[in-house]
Length: 365
Ligand code: NAI
Ligand code: MG
Image 1 (cartoon, protein in one colour):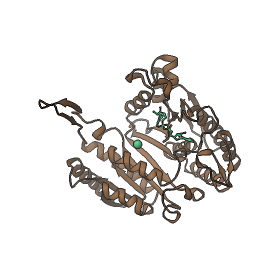
Image 2 (cartoon, rainbow, N blue to C red; image 1 turned 90 degrees about the vertical axis):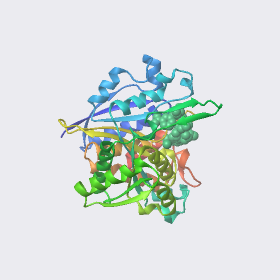
Image 3 (cartoon, rainbow, N blue to C red; image 1 turned 30 degrees about the vertical axis):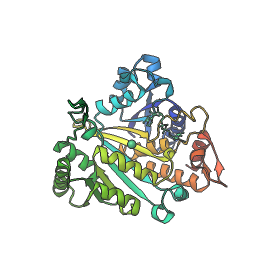
Image 4 (spheres, rainbow, N blue to C red; image 1 turned 135 degrees about the vertical axis):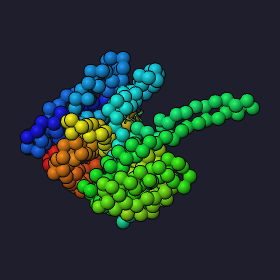
């Protein structure tokens, strides 16, 4: 059996608490013959700053380049609010994303039947929901130049952001979306604003070309981003995979997230290109939530987003779909049995803390 190199970066706040639960699950997968892991661990965020004066060390970056997959907890907290902009905790995460060129951000929105009441929509609209948003993460208006605020002669100011996409950036994110759709329900909705934006025109054209030449077996639909947002709250179950740019993806993935309930439930993956020689795809897996300083150190954090992120690593980095399915089923199982951390608690359920939830998931496994 191949040994997979995992780098664990627990980070700050509740990061180390939820990472501790993931370590138990990794141990379980290893001892039950699902996979074999070699594990490294290092610091990121404020924890790294306190130790080394930088939010991620060159040594940790070297480990990140060497790893088959990275699991990250969370970074940040009020303790580091006053440190320099370049060494703030988030800069560690941004360096990882940028240096590893993690251009494809995958955010699944899955509604567990036991939690359908936690959604902002009615149960029948969200029960069984399973949408995957594929967001372009390293281009678009967040990075385009010029990006300025200038003073005008009449005392007014002018701010400029620039949305730039080159065709190779659209091609590679489209490929990721189509490949993932083939492992799911084989349907992709591509979203842009070609009616008002040139990048939207190119986006639609390139996605269509990639589809026609390589993925014509996948069903493709184009939707304008505003219409897609409307459809997400009107009838979310019509979607399987949604592929979109950095800005629209930021918004639409937060909309989709709230259809499923708590931040403590949501995993994510950020993928790079497949390397020519090794065939390996760089990948970082992390919960959508942050360091949650308000509950850090209290044993209250929900570890499901972190454990779900490990499940995504099994599925997307290691081709261990069976192990990923087992994790998903165990999470659904403990929720069905009524185990709830504080963030998803409702009357009559069994209240557990971080380790209690981790232990319940292990018992279910
Ligand atoms: P947050 O996600 O840390 O917390 C928002 C709210 O959700 C809080 O009330 C928190 O207690 C709750 N929450 C989050 N995760 C939870 C979990 N697993 N179980 C139970 N409850 C949970 O976002 P916030 O408060 O805006 O940011 C706190 C710090 O985290 C900041 O320093 C921020 O910069 C950082 N952050 C880091 C991220 C990352 O590492 N990727 C992402 C978002 C924020
Ligand atoms: Mg966002």
